[in-house]
Amino acid sequence: MPSRRFLPMILLLGILLIPMICRAEKPPPPPMPPESLDMNLTTFSELAAAMSTVEYIPGKPGLLVYGTGRGFVYLYKVYGSRMKPVAETNLWKGIKSVTLVDMDQDGAPEVVVLTKEAMLYVLDREDLTIIWSTEESYFEGISCFTVADMEDDGQNEIIILADNHLFVFDIGSGYERWKSLVERKATHIVAGDVDGDGMKELVLSDGTVLGPRLYEEEWIWDQSFGHRMILLDMDNDGILEVVSLDGGGNLQIVDVDERARQWK
Ligand SMILES: [Ca+2]
Ligand SMILES: [Ca+2]
Ligand SMILES: [Ca+2]
Ligand SMILES: [Ca+2]
Image 1: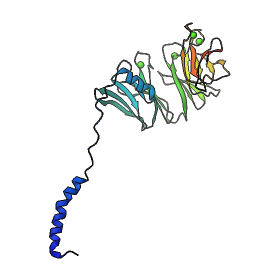
Image 2: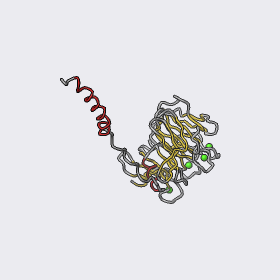
Image 3: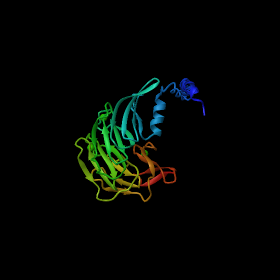
Image 4: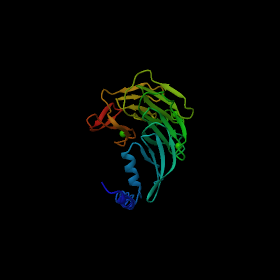
């Protein structure tokens, strides 16, 4: 045990050593941020294509919309080396997907957001304010949706497959125009004139084709269209074909007007 007369000296030594110990344990400086985020249009397109929660505003390569798992939606502007949020909103529910659709047909897109708690929002692309949304807890699960002017009256409808039923909402009024009595199950839905009669049909990935006005069954293919479905005029005859990946991941082209698979 040290003698009492050395105690002040030991204390003084301790006080002098503390800053040295503190300096020794100082954490290393944080890594420098990446030098540049100077994204070009290709980078934006690739990022948006790969991430369901990221979209870029077409024609404005400096602007990105991004929805987070915590329910925030951000509009980011890329300034050379940094991304700065220029608008944000909190929807309080994790974001499942962000899509850009021209809902009001004014030539510029609105931001359509699907949340993990089965709500759809239409947001203003400039300030992300809510233009329209489904009611809270109205749906338990939204399988897919599409936007189309089904009867060509200049007003888009939003067509939602939720809780095994199809719903058609009028965007302008928010009014629920139609709900299917029959149960429907599909993972993708698209709208377009697939039989060349000048009117759009609804095409469900399970193989169902519904008419434009009364949503009656026009054709039920006994096979599934598959998933990742789009409508394209593959043979240049002026009529859209259903192009999709079948259950096994193979590309297939289905001619709805001829009721047959054209190619696989
Ligand atoms: Ca618009
Ligand atoms: Ca319409
Ligand atoms: Ca048609
Ligand atoms: Ca065609």
